[in-house]
Length: 371
Image 1 (cartoon, helix red, strand yellow):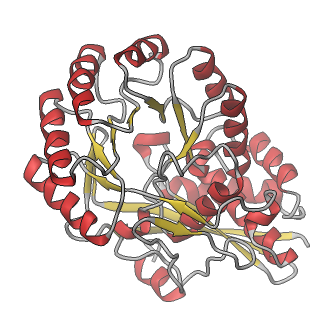
Image 2 (cartoon, helix red, strand yellow; image 1 turned 180 degrees about the vertical axis):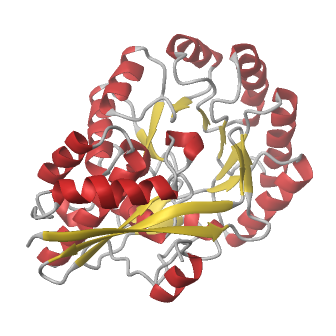
């Protein structure tokens, strides 16, 4: 089997009314992503999704289209898509950085490899350890009444873990988490995510007060370069999760050596593909640090890839740190013919060949923005 063409389609999918979100990075109202198709001479087509965001990695859906069709496509044209390592090295030689775009192409390669072999991607990754992945739902950095309304809505669905965005005004952050804890009661695990929004004094102020709310973990309180200061925050007694601090295996090694995290968040888009996420997980495992499956509010294809990864990698401990495989729940469409089984407590891992995700051409036509 040989690659004959790469295709990238920019899309813009709004979040559902009442489920738009707010973080220290800003408001997230519409997802401007790109869908990737890798065509082959066998007739099989692999699917990928670039959940790009300029505030995250400098990528946009338009830059992804150009990178896929003008740089990455020519780099792997004629190659065997089942030789994922070789294709990955060719892409890295052709284009620096651009992890979300490369991840979309690599997803499509895994999809093709699974379809060609007649097995799900998790089987190619060594076989699944888990049939389902425990998940949580996210509450944006809204005022306490709106945060409580969302918490009650999610708990009414049967959700068993909540994530609250913080990292803006420390006093307001504490008030928001207090309100959610009171609404959720003592038995629902709650995490917070500052998205690098606090400086050191603000982080110390907030975390000292947030300890009272029995948090499972506090995610990315400081700027990624502040490993020493983040290590010092661990002395407050809250588990610290690194997210924006860890893009690569080398980043994971740095954070582990600095003792700057209790948990590391990974996911294919941020890391640049499933293979790169596995490398991060292995580095963390060697340091005795568990991993968590993060998110950039993916649609259906990328969420499927995350499920296969979380199912197959031992050190992605979604049982202890519920995963952020939640993007389709927030969007008006997932672009799939058959939605993933994202149930309130856990997401069910697909068992169909490849990623187990089929593109809905009608939805694609509705949300594409290149016509």
